[in-house]
Image (cartoon, rainbow over all chains, first blue to last red; front, side, top):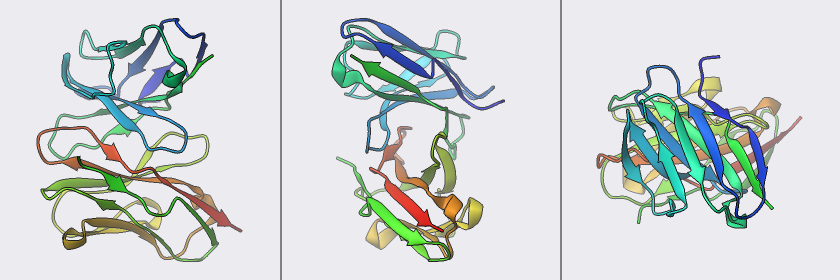
Length: 114
Length: 114
C-alpha cells in the first residue's frame, strides 16, 4: 500500500498521560499536514511541514502539542498531559510540493482520553 | 476570518435522484476549492478540485462541481445517485496567500436509500 499510513489507529489513554502518534507520508511527498477532527465536524488544521521545516502552526496547537519531522520523511505528533477535550480523530495528510498540490489523507488515529 | 459553509447537514435521497450539495466560502481573493468524500469506515478521499480555468469541474464517480465566483460558491452535483454514494461529503478551501492549510466545512451526510 503506497498511501499515507498512521500508527496507532486507536489509542485510549487516561487524562494526564502523554501520547505520540506517527504518520508516514506517501513516498517522495515533501509536504506533511496534521489535522484534528471531532464528531460532526470537518477536519481542523493543526500544522504543516515542508521537508523538515514546520512552516505553519494553528492556534489550535497549544503548548501541550508538538510535532516533528526530523528527517523530512515520517512525522510524529505528541500530546502532553492529555485532557478529555483532546479526544478526537487525528488525521495526517501529505502532498507533493507543487502549486496545484492535492492533500492525500491517511486513515487517522482515534484518541480517547478517559 | 475565512470560513466554509455547508448548508445541508443531512440529506436523504432515493436511488436515481439528483444531488446538489451547497458550499459557500467567505474570502474575497483567489481560492483553491476541493470536495472530499468519506465513505463509512474509510479515510477522506478527493472527489474533485478547482484551481483555475473552466469553472465546471468533473471528478470521479460521476460527480461535478461548479465554481461561481460572484456567489462564492462551489456546489457539488450528481445527476443520479447510487446507494454506494452514501457517505459524508466535505467542501474545503485553500487561500491563495501562500498558506497550505485546508479549511473544511462541517460536512454533509448523504444517505441514499435503495
